[in-house]
Image (cartoon, rainbow, N blue to C red; front, side, top):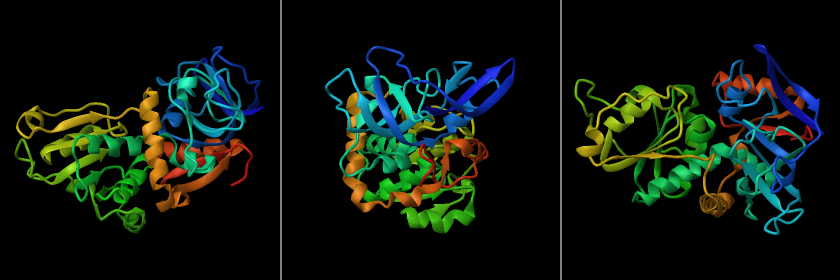
Length: 329
């Protein structure tokens, strides 16, 4: 099969399409014929020299994929069933989704709702899964319809989909971005308002800023997350999944002990089966009201996938970059 392989030897990185024979890692692996994959920031990290994310010197990259089951050792998944594959060590320590076929452990395979095609599943991808998981986490915390929810990194994969999903579930999504020329695009995605990065909080001379947000979805991390925590309203929460700015968080305990705020970590890698089913079901519920194609930045073939990795690495995308194993749209 054709596959996009990342290999590194003595500090020399090689990227490109190779012929690879698919083989299971474990007896319980499910074989899936891949229709589409998507490029994530994590993929760009894997395809970097000296990557601390990649845990193999040579592997097929791609942390998510969608397609149809070819064979499964478990009757839960029947041949022909449409599924999404994401999580675990896929595309990090074992062969992933940038290929015509992928073997994946049973726990990282999810049945797709009837309302979502395999193409739409990868427009959603790990980014959209994370976005909906973030929305559900805020709802579980008690966030009510109409609440003002800040979304940082709003032009990215997680951010842009968070804006839309919040809007579809009755919240007022406030999109924060450093690209002010993206305002119209974000308003079209469902944002009630677009603000700049420097408008997340105020009163820098004080430990806490004004109470501005009923909740937040943070895709950036670092100083941005610190400023969100300073400006949440009493009892609010931020669902955090990003570290593009930094993995470090320099803050105080004041937001947590004087405003009863919460920091909710969102993980799409090791999410339990029940969580995966719930998130995909919620995505299916809103699918009829979302034009997923508007999230597509571009569609690439396996052969020109390296171009997409550079775009993601430079933060120069709006929405998702799809990878078609057949080379088509």
